[in-house]
Amino acid sequence: MDRIPILKMGPFLLVTIQVDLYDRLALNLENDLISMVSKTGARGVLIDISAVSIVDSFMGRILGNIASMSRIMDAETVVVGMQPAVAITLVELGLTLQGVYTALDVEKGMELLRDKIGVMNDPEEDEEEPDDSND
Amino acid sequence: MDRIPILKMGPFLLVTIQVDLYDRLALNLENDLISMVSKTGARGVLIDISAVSIVDSFMGRILGNIASMSRIMDAETVVVGMQPAVAITLVELGLTLQGVYTALDVEKGMELLRDKIGVMNDPEEDEEEPDDSND
Image (cartoon, rainbow over all chains, first blue to last red):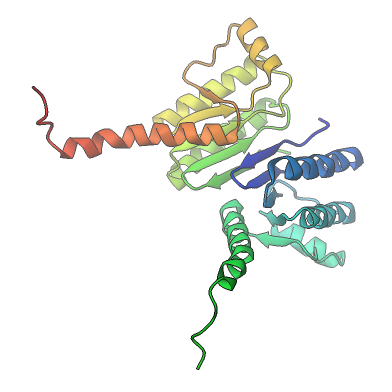
């Protein structure tokens, strides 16, 4: 398999990682995700890693890369379903996944993304109403 | 890998098949799906096979099994993302996936499931209103 499928769900993209991310697969995933964000105008990327039981620094770096690339394209990245052992390993490896949001499962991840998008939209709406209620 | 992750999204379950379904993996998937339907009360199962490029009669039978089992548990099954070559092969194999709904992608599959659930709920709501409008 050379590609991991990317599913479009409303304003979000969903990727389920079920296999070991070797070099070419990871690069393809990065490319495909960025193309999909650009093509669909997605505002969020959900990466489900509940099937991943072994993690290494390469995987950590790929997740960080995807998050950084997505942010430049105005999409937030949430990693969901991390197994406890994976979290332990990541911290022991010194990888704290900076810039990557995490959530327990896909539903909570979607809520988080909706909040993020909401928070990003709200200030603009508020700017239109002058704040006259100050004492 | 012994298990394919099952993601809960509202009233639906989502499964992305990315690897060849050998015997044990397929049996685990059937068991896990039915347990999840029972545990979560899910009304629909979405199976994404966009990453599947080779299909055989075993795979066809597994999809049919899952659909039949889910229906007994009061959940509909929609297979989404089928590649054209897979559809051709299925028909050539004489497998017409009876009892399995199909849709082009996850979004259309979800719409279809919502329609199905809506259709199933509507008659009950209508029953409460006596039908006096007959001539």
